[in-house]
Length: 305
Ligand SMILES: Nc1ncnc2c1ncn2[C@@H]1O[C@H](COP(=O)(O)OP(=O)(O)OP(=O)(O)O)[C@@H](O)[C@H]1O
Image 1 (tube, rainbow, N blue to C red):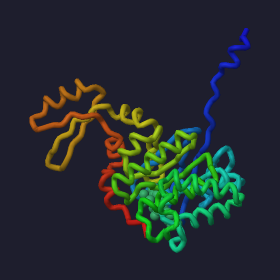
Image 2 (spheres, helix red, strand yellow):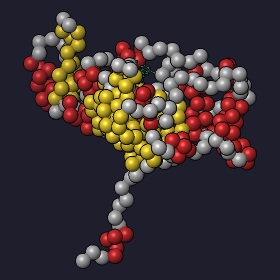
Image 3 (tube, rainbow, N blue to C red):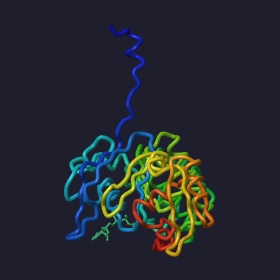
């Protein structure tokens, strides 16, 4: 017989905040998303990684009610996106890849405009705008026009705008693209801070090393298909935790091993110079997609006006 105490100690499962089931999106003859299924749990930072044109933005657009899927089901905060778009919109913040701030308005005015669209009361919006300007470090520049903002400042304002109505789920499409390393680090710190405050985060990125250290789980998407899903540690382990790397006539050759001693033994058997190192998430990405993430990041289009 179960004691009363046993019932009170049952651990609650974290809620599923984002769910996709067999989602397809066609644009005419182009299949942008080709049957993707995965879910994101409450409090997770989930990274969607993939080369250009893999289908990441399309996936975010469907989840955030901007594009309808051709087939499949999407749920956000427990609501079906197809039939409850208003309920979904109330519960999500979206940081788009493109800077769509009002350039002629100041940072504060941009936030005010968004607060009015969300029908926030005067008291609430005034409090929340000040709070968020402080949170993203823009209080002293809040009354300057956005056209004078740097790329990093604009990105921080986009994040503040997305958080204005206190959504429990945040979508960020390439939040650090085109930013210098210090600014990128600041944005990632901010994402971690928001996550510590309980927010569920789904983001896309080309900076694989950042996803490696920040995302609890990642999904790798290529040609519209999810080709790997797991924690960064799980994905690296599947490939082999140690890598032996050396140059041949065609370029860099990499071999993966479960243990350091196996990797070292292999390296010693080679006659050329070799490097033995821990496997990175970028190795997983390159092995699965056949493309170098660094090359992809360097050919990104400039997206800030
Ligand atoms: N509105 C559209 N009309 C036609 N084709 C589209 C449209 N939007 C996206 N596509 C195509 O769908 C595919 C997936 O595009 P998507 O923008 O989702 O990729 P992505 O992974 O976000 O790429 P990136 O890293 O470059 O942002 C691409 O082939 C793209 O050209």
